Length: 523
Image (cartoon, rainbow, N blue to C red; front, top):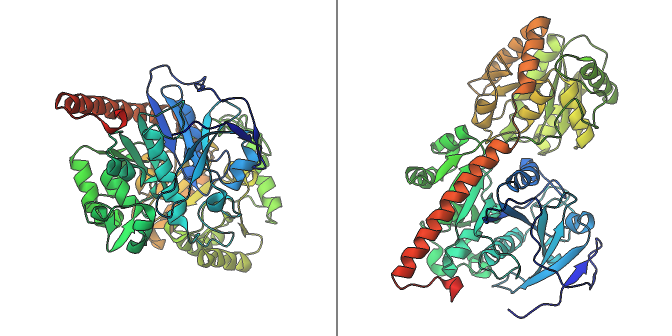
């Protein structure tokens, strides 16, 4: 690759000359030599659509104590606007219809190195990482995220940043899942970990798009990228990645069954039998502390609930709700079918009948939003719904509520229940995925087995019973507030996976060398 003249891009995306960029090492990185590229489609520092954005902001920072880790993310408009000066360190060629792009490098305030794909034609748009302001997917998402996967593979091959090359890729969900496939098709033996945050989102496209994405004909088969006649980004990742993880142990077990496997359970069972599937529970970051959180209307701890009451009063005023001595239930969520919002809307009647209130904040699909708004219209002062999301209001809602409703039909991990617990709000949740792993029934929240209205309303009745016993309520709150863990345990588990894959790759390289085969990247 010819040498590039480094440039910097200001927040407005304009480039201007700058001094040569040296291969700087992340000052917070551990000195053990393992280099990991964390590849993601969203990161809360810049833009997020869900829990993946939170994970992508927190986990790499925890891994920095153990690995030399950097983040790769598309150069969305928000990244260019908020990222500060961006130094251009490389340029990648086109493949099929995937356009060329530049590789930018920036540093966050705490020194985390982030690489951004600078390709305005694909990423400089108004909307979410995945679609426009109306929630409609971008028509060229196949190109947008094939570009991301191809760039990740280029990093692994030493073609993206002359000063830094990872020895492992950590990929996240379908937008990044073509990376291990591109590595396999180029004969590059760099290991990869693919974390499944939600198996239901698979990145499905017409098979005719394969050539445009640089996918070879031989790969369009059941042992490859084909899924029921379509091209599946996620299927490619599940097949070609060195190791798969999910975001909770229970979800790792659930996806082996047809009811949760989304048609991929057969391949996943094969990976599990090979020892290539594991569940690592997500954590939450240190900012979720009611004693210090600057967002809250009042701060509090396990022995002083006055700040919690101040948040409850704020929430009621902000949403035009009546004063009440009854419990305040909350929903802070994407308002989609998966989250059981239809069940929660139906259960609102039982909450109001027993003297409780319900506040909802979030956005999602039109039908669940309308169902909740209809309930609020029928019960003014007792049920309030705000379509949209605001970080401060969300945190005050967690802090002010007594109970959080999470009747999710499935939940790979869930962060909301852990946020609520840390803020003394007891989750009322379906026993599935990460909810089962993070909630102790009757101790730090309430779990119900069957995902039905009757089971949910029975759990709500148990919550009302606890609310009427101040001693029990306070004991459960204290237990809940001390249970959610940070990211250190998850980071340790991911480090273990990376170390095993790195060791296996070195053994494989040695065997290939002794057999007279030189790895492609060394040629």
